Amino acid sequence: MHDDTDHQISRIAVLGATGSIGTQTLDIIARRPDRYRASVLAAGSRVDALIELCRRHRPALAVIADTTQYQRLRQELEPLGIATAAGPEALADAVERPDVDMVVTATVGYSGLVPTIRAINAGKDIALANKETLVVAGEYITRLLRNSPSRIIPVDSEHSAIYQCLQGEDPDTVSRLIITASGGPFRSWSADRIATATAADALRHPNWSMGAKITIDSATMLNKAFEIIEARWLFDIDPQRITAVVHPQSVIHSMVEYVDGAIKAQLGVPDMRLPIAYALGYASRATNVSAGLTMAQMAQLTFEEPDTERFPCITLARKALAEGGNTACIINAANEIAVAAFLRGDIAFGHIYRAITDTLARVPFIAAPGFDDYVATNSEARAVAADIITHYKA
Image (cartoon, rainbow, N blue to C red; front, top):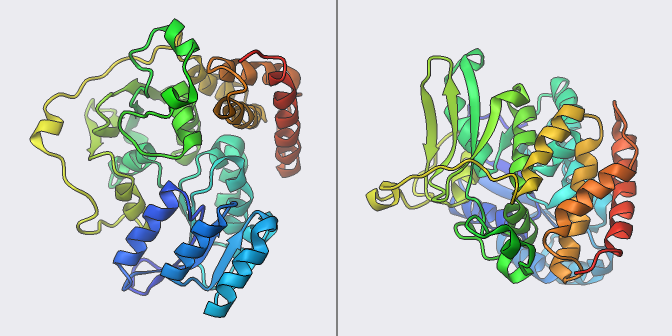
């Protein structure tokens, strides 16, 4: 495992290499060949994009989860001396390779869970950009980490901000974690207007450039519910001491309040390269990662309470953490199905929350799930949600 006390090159596996976080991670790696090397690049189904990235970064191994794309991957990359593999199992196997020191999990949704578990069991460090891993199985992952030398360094901008604010502080002096939210594209919309929102409306995020799934989660504010759940496990803190606040400017990425009343905040432009570089550097700071904030950008910073009437998905954090067990796993699975249906135009925006609550009512609760229970819950909740939404009218 990489020892951050020396200056050897850190060998990195990038899962979700063709996505927004993955490509920005590779930009940072390419800028510092003296510090980083991309040893494994993995993607879901975008084979042409993966091939192009592999030509540029020359990893030892390329993995495509979609097995139907394998022949093309192999034909293009084997002449370059790049090994190839396909399928979810091959992707999970890749994180265990001896030429991997750190795993960047930048895949979307439930797909990040198994590779992260395998990486922890193999003692690899993890730059975690896949919030669903800790949402779905936070308690299970926390148990695994207790028996592994692995460290998880968060890449989500909010959790990276908290991580940075906690540096050098006694965890026992933390009073509260304050997670900021942009409010998404519908922050100023009425409930009636939100109900008729199209996918194109929801994908117009005011501040961040992200993939479609996470952009929709931002519009429903379920991403903020997920971030509260993730923070509970990442920072081992009572859920009652985690709050969310809407901060439309996205300048303050999150805050930590201490027992003496002081609040530390991490500020920066909305650029994911900042938290990515901080994670790759094991909480050290690289030079010239992003533009600095201007006085104009800091001139007006405003805050609002989240509106749970217009954005009921944010309330699902409290439900998931209060009930525990497989509740969050059900929520995540139903949401993935519902978001995909909304993006296809099959259901209305308001049906996303309804699909989640309807699925929760139908999938059995498991109080102390093991790994097999998470797998079964995820499968069942997806099937239930897919059936439920066929009865909705878009």
